[in-house]
Length: 137
Image 1 (cartoon, rainbow, N blue to C red):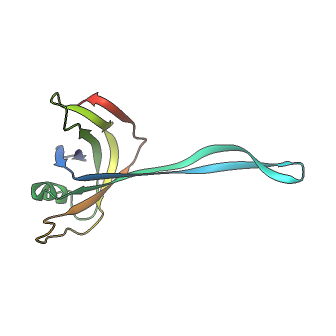
Image 2: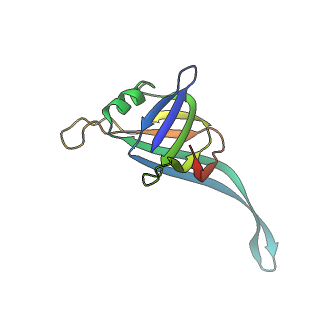
Image 3: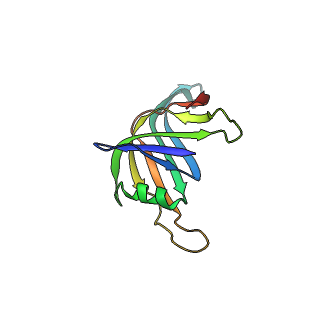
């Protein structure tokens, strides 16, 4: 799996990642009207949408690349994708579009013998992200 992050005004950095955990929340706006003796919901529309990924890597060089964004916050664009390891043609199993994002550390970097250089960072989408499955890289 890979995260390709391009900081604003910088060059693309391709980071091999161990985990990608997505989060999606949509606030619903519910309209209610009187119906007989009750107040009933008659319409629901999506309101605010938040989408983010927690991306983890244990590759030391990847950690250096990730830390190059700065220890606090970076704006830029990102593409996330996972290649099918069983496919010799290099087909991508899952991929996002290139989306505007904010990147910030999720955890402190861990340096120890058991799990050397584990690091997680959060990618917050600043626009709607589309995902495709079983496409080509």
